[in-house]
Structure formats: structure tokens, C-alpha cells
Length: 70
Image (cartoon, rainbow, N blue to C red; front, side):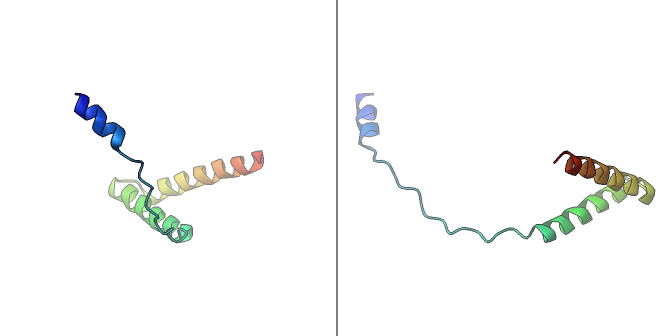
């Protein structure tokens, strides 16, 4: 036990590795991919195009409300 305490006190702090920054995300492309994925998932689960339009309309309504609050 004393040896473990001695070893723990001898451990020096390690500087974090320098990681090059990633390029900024392409949000437009990400939104296209997400939209297609959601659409495909809804269709595969039996949702009709009219129901998907209703969902999209509800999302637009929520965003519009959110914009009005700003």
C-alpha cells in the first residue's frame, strides 16, 4: 500500500497532446443527410407523404415561433 502511494506521488502531470483543429462542419450537407435519413426512416415505418408534410409543417411552425421570441 505504501508503495502505491509513493508511486502515485511520483507521477508527473502530462501535458495534453496538441490535436490539430478539425475543419468547420458543413452544416448544410449535414442537414441534407439528416433530412434524407429521417424521411427514409419515416417511409420505411409506414408514414405517408401527407403525414411527413404535416410533420415538416409542425417543425416549421415551431421554428417560426422560436424566431418570433428572439
